[in-house]
Amino acid sequence: MALPDILRNVGTALDRVENYIDGMDTTFNPKNTLNGIRISLTTVRGHMQRHAQDAINLQAYNNEVNERRRWYQIAQGRQTNNQRMAFKKQNRINILAQEKAVLQILARELNSRQIILNLQNNPPGNMATIQDVMTSMAPLLAQIPQYEGQEPPDTYHNKVMQAISYGHNLGVAGFINDAMKVTVLSGKMEGRFVPPNPFNNGAGNPVNTPALFQA
Image (cartoon, rainbow, N blue to C red; front, side, top):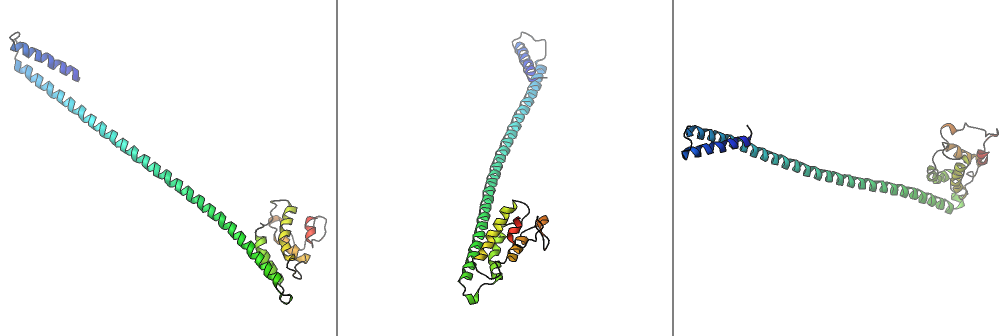
């Protein structure tokens, strides 16, 4: 029975007991009615206790949900902060790596210039050898990737020839030989562009000078 109905019945029973006391209705035993009221009140008390416990349980559940939500938000904030810090750290690493690469290139360039300067300052009796020149040119040639068709042949040819031009400033006998220049140019080719030795150009002429690479 619903709680309002129980309370309504209790009210009716109390009215009957009151009528009995007033002598208006003595046709029933008031003890039985009072026992019924007592049972009804016990039932009401049980209902109220269950509702109170349900309310307590609901409040506890809501508190737990709110606490979990709070900790989740804290964890999300920490994770976001950690990700932000990791992103900044990685950016810094990338920047340092780029700076290191630039410094290495500059160091090779300075080293090459110093080698050239030292060779130029050598007296004629202690003139640099072709091997010295190739050593000084190695860092410059290393900066030029192997040719794989990534750019027009003339453009690539000019890049290699600029590196080779360092040898002209050293005045080393034999280095300005066309055969040596052809060897350097051939060595920068890769894959399907590797020529046989010896090889001819498109016109069928033996490639024995740098100019014939472009013919």
